[in-house]
Length: 188
Image (cartoon, rainbow, N blue to C red; front, side, top):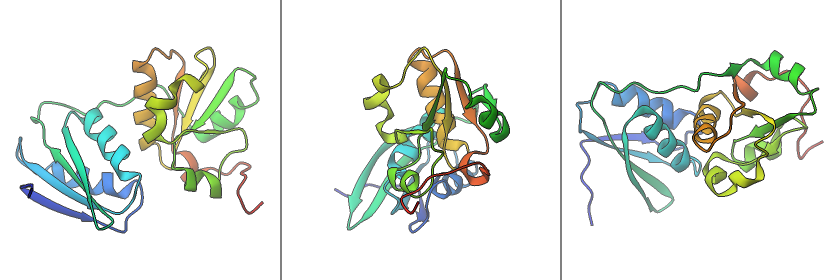
């Protein structure tokens, strides 16, 4: 079955958050109801684009994989909807200070490969795409600080956690892209 899209966006070879960044930039200039096909090779792009579309009020239609390329289909919503952002954020310095507290859980929602090569020692890895299935691994009684590379996926994760009844959830911005504290990796 051939799926018709109004617009095509080539994001092949790009890693997170670039498929979202390029989609966001393209979709703002489209007409309401237009469908964009985003072609990507980043395996994490499915969960990322699905969560972004939901938070931005757009309709995520689905993904088809052909010959190693993921074809994501997103329908632009009406222009009245604004992208929701999680209201509670902390910067990297605040996170570093709060990690000393016993009642803190640091949740890293990057892909497992990203986590393996560099992560904050105290972090627990649950990639954004697995969050719904693994949410019961997160202690609701703790202050949950969520980190990703830039603050985009972690924002989506914070929204999901809040929807599931977590009260103390904080998005770490800008996240690992500018983290200067201690890290662990497969190489160390």
